[in-house]
Length: 75
Image (cartoon, rainbow, N blue to C red):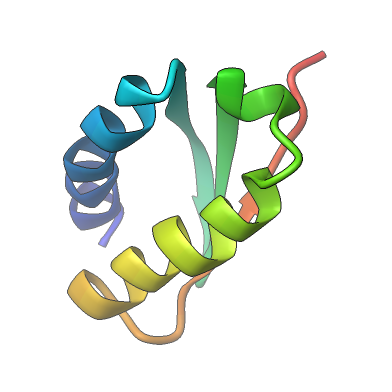
């Protein structure tokens, strides 16, 4: 399933890159997918909405409806 998640994230990346941001896969444990929003997405006040309404919804539709997506801050 991790390969499907990685592929789905690659499908999403161009949309984020068009707005000056990007997304990186960090890890997957069970149904929890950890990603890192970078660039303009990292500091955007709408990043949580992008994560839940965009990324998580896409992954749930195309990979598994039980997935949860969490952003890890870039330190």
